[in-house]
Image (cartoon, rainbow, N blue to C red; front, top):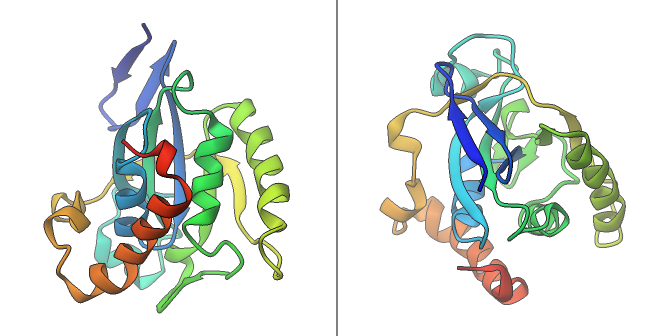
Length: 190
């Protein structure tokens, strides 16, 4: 069984079985809700990645001046969840063809991006983009880059959908994504 080591910067480093990848698919409330229910995923943490400012706040990220994307850290067991399947879900549950925009959310913090921690993830991500492109008439604009410093989001963002599912944003934006997930990926859901 693999071991997970935690370091002071809240980054998860893995050895053995568990792997970590960072996915930015617009609002992290949506992405967190999707991946929380996937078999083989042991942790989903919303936060900020890909920017230039240390310890950014939600407000600073929303201003668009830090360079960070709203993203989730996904820790998964590759023996239970193939990275290709994880990425298929990622591309099916957000619009990877809009630059710096998801629905009504606009700004670089809502960009579609994938931050990998292994070369296998990078290779698989590029193949997943080619495969997903078949489902979109516009070009996929998702960036694929090596993971940088990840900063967990403030406590009130964590498990947001599960504690606020009657919120209009959750009901109108996140619930349809989860319905699509249930319809298209029922065999991958816990």
